[in-house]
Picture 1 (cartoon, one colour):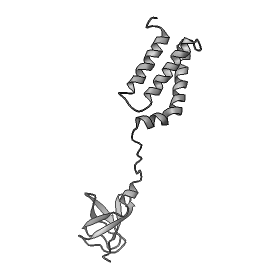
Picture 2 (picture 1 turned 135 degrees about the horizontal axis):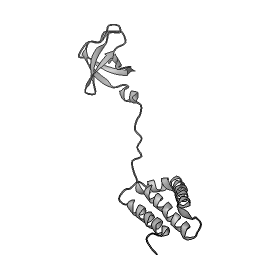
Picture 3 (picture 1 turned 90 degrees about the vertical axis):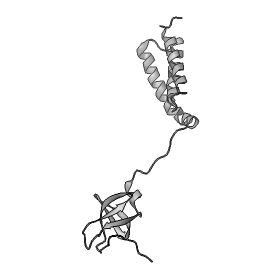
Picture 4 (picture 1 turned 30 degrees about the horizontal axis):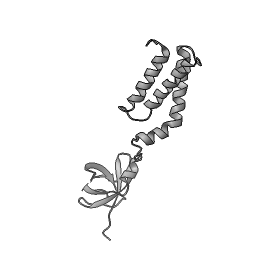
Length: 152
């Protein structure tokens, strides 16, 4: 058998891809290599002929293997499956901040220090003096809406 034989080429590519899974974990490359081994077997059994049919079978087998066994390989290989919070508003809600510049009265904006950064802040209409603690209610455009923390 010469190395130019398509059966050998598909088999070698498949085995190399499967072994590459040891270096590049993720559970997909091993499935792509398995699809290449399937193509090698189909070429050996004369089920497919030529490059176009071999590539078509490889694409179909790859998709089928990935769709079928992705969950299984992900459990074996592992990986980060944490889904973080994508809503920034939830991170702001009910946090405390320090008033740096008096807020109010009315809709007059002031400044607060929140999470190590100065922010423009608006209040509920009452005057909130500098140095007091406030609770962040929400964000309105680029300003934070705050309310004073009562000492009850």
